[in-house]
Image (tube, rainbow over all chains, first blue to last red; front, side, top):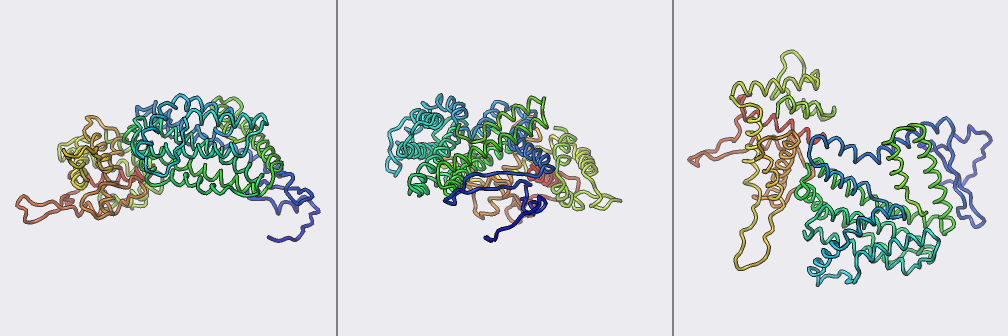
Length: 337
Length: 208
């Protein structure tokens, strides 16, 4: 990258630096040359179409799965199962905020006894494996995750060591659930897929937060980080994807179209989780300290919120379905309250 | 299932790239137009032609569209079933649970569709998807029996499946000479109808 300074005398000269999405960024640095503040700007005549594009992208992302389900509801008699798939696929990315996690927590907590029993059976089968034999209970992990989010929300201390233990426990819990799937132990496959994606979502949120705490304290990445990341590769491995296909077509009696939707969405969601962690770590390493990260997150969240609000107000002021889609999309913006 | 509904839910539902591929696969080998060039045939024209074809099959063979579909499913089953590994027989001395091969599990589920009295286009698509994925795995793996298979529709090669089906043989009753399973000399016969249905449904699967 060139270090030459460009002298701008007119607003027209700025247009040469406008990015493909018509929105550009300015950043100011502090005395130590670290990033201080990010500014996003757009030329006014471009902003209207950009807002509509954002609105359309949000609508497409939110309704991607539900539209397909709606089209086929009239054709097949599996509406209850479709609603559950919708919950599974659309309910992700809720585990980074208290409000979002509360939705997931309620369902997971009600299933914790069943999950615990299945894990017990897997532990019996895997006596000689190298799985960490942690004596945890599923609902304790859920409560600990909630406690961690609560501490973050209220600005209470949550130590690096406690965070590391939480990440480790969630990683082990996720691996056990994958084993439940691979060993065909669960009689309720639909619940199991939901559990796997939910715990993966929790794990993703926790790992991101741990990466931040650890890097800011130690200016390094934890030595177990790559090991924890391997779980995403396991989730999209051939063995697991085949099991998801079997769950869909054989156990849930879905059509081939819906089975495709199930396993492809599962795969896509997992890869999104992985990318979130990777992108977050890059950002953490870039901004360097907690204050910079906080400022960046606040700016990004405000920008996204404002753009979403403007886009929806402009395009859909009275439409109730779109209002609901707007609320769902707001929940999907990952932020620490 | 009516032939009109079937055609509406398959041919008329295709996006342009899959419609053009279907048109090239059917014209002129199976369906012909006296005046129009193949490239001039629209979705609606091809749909009408297909409906007329199924009607002619009914007039010639006496089998309505439901019976034509039954024959189609039975033909696919005869080609696929003998190549899918069966579950091993239980060993009385051994208490280990019997694991049914994955391919057989999917085959059995697809077979349950064939047993339904009334079938929808969606069910026919599901049946074809599983049977052709199993057949494709057999073609790719080159083994006598398949115990696992690739469920993804990306594995389907329509041309390879059709070419291979054309070469399928069955032994004569004397076990001396082998003849081809499907006789495609007559356009208006159930064997050719099977091929036309296979081609239409495979394009529908790829389109979704």
